Image 1 (cartoon, rainbow, N blue to C red):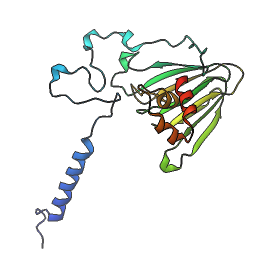
Image 2 (image 1 turned 90 degrees about the vertical axis):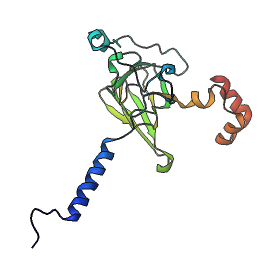
Image 3 (image 1 turned 90 degrees about the horizontal axis):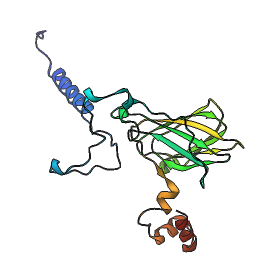
Length: 224
């Protein structure tokens, strides 16, 4: 008969494995809060951290947590939209909170062109007007397109990292607000990145990728 005070070997192994698993569950790399953060051996030469340095709590005021977005953005541009971002760059109180916001103004038929947020999921709500919105899934999922027409009060979610867009399909202005799951979500506008990079992407790369001739690639690069 086994002594009740003696712990079986399998129970000890199980406990060790559980402890090991828990240590992995609580140990992880922090999510990036900027495009890159190159390591440096000498801290005296460092200029950035993954995020922002913290202000002395004793010096914090209510203004550190406040910003007005009442003024409509200027939509007199080629795409007919304007994004007023409220990230940690504009609102210091967002630091470490993992959230940000953007106001998007649209002229009639205005477009917030295809873009992606490398560090955030976007939650959009329409305040005024009618928007045709959508996102495209990854290559592995077959680049499926999900679209919806949104009216005032409707909401839509764009999963993190996926290319998405918003088009005002009405003949009047439209306004939407987006909440993003990062203090610094980042934005990559596809056309700007591909045809307006600095320095420009080699035209041989673009002609082969888009299966067009160099004259068209050259024209598109000039637009950006």
